Image (cartoon, rainbow, N blue to C red; front, side):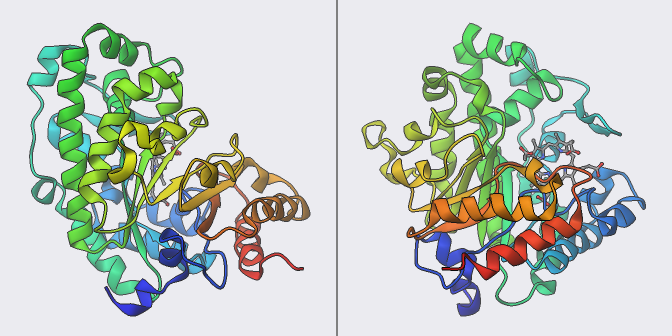
Length: 351
Ligand code: CP3
């Protein structure tokens, strides 16, 4: 890898090395809260945007440049990987993603297609290529995918869900079918991440956004083994960030040597704002990402910076902190507050 990328603040922190300043990027840093995003988005549908490399690249590059963050993230989404497998996906205005033929039975699982993401999602490669050419030479690009459980929850429920009733019914009622589904998604996700790495990303984040709905016992049995498989396949190539919400009781299992975690620990653990940031290091992570409550950004400037200082304080004296939010930026977040936050993190805590 290019030395400037290798020595970037972000990748140093991913490796748990001491960096001269705390790197910062923000989940969903490109999105509707930004007028530049809305202008590009007005030209096409959300899926159209994801599938047009020139536009997707521009969204990623705009966000990195406007905010001055230490890493860029590929503009894409968790769910388009489901389309080539046979799911009918749309994004409804104001409602979020919808799958019109949700998966409910073992027969549905048998009918899933398994195309190579390199061939079925070439637009992602196109976007990565354009982004890498447009980024400053010292700014890494983060790729991402949904983790097997979270992807399955969408595929089964057909969209976002409060109680995940269909997902848990299948998981608990037909463990064989669940295993087959997890195996299928794990292969697809792994190939997709490996493709992103070949196409040129410097790190990957695995989003397990909905895994917090599981008890620790169910997580350990029905979700964690597949997370580990994905991480094992990618680890050593680029740093892996593992993020979920509501994971305070689950993350220790990810790092537990008694559960064979040695080869499958993520390089970086993402912490949501319900969990103290320090827990990341306490459970054995070398690098920890997080964890400002994204809603803080709606408060007056001084309050935003006060809460940001608390996050920096929590990481003080530790190496490997990547400043981020505890979940994605929300629509309507004031852009000026986001920029002030990034500047504040870069200035660091004053003694
Ligand atoms: O800037 C970035 O972080 C890169 C792009 C990115 C998007 N989605 C763009 C997007 C990333 C990394 C994601 C991840 C994602 N997508 C997650 C995991 C993060 C999380 O919040 O837990 C999830 C659960 C999804 C699924 C998804 N996509 C939902 C629930 C929605 C609708 C709700 C919403 O926020 O709009 C989307 C749509 C989406 N993904 C938009 C963007 C910019 C907005 C779509 C629009 O322009 O209308």
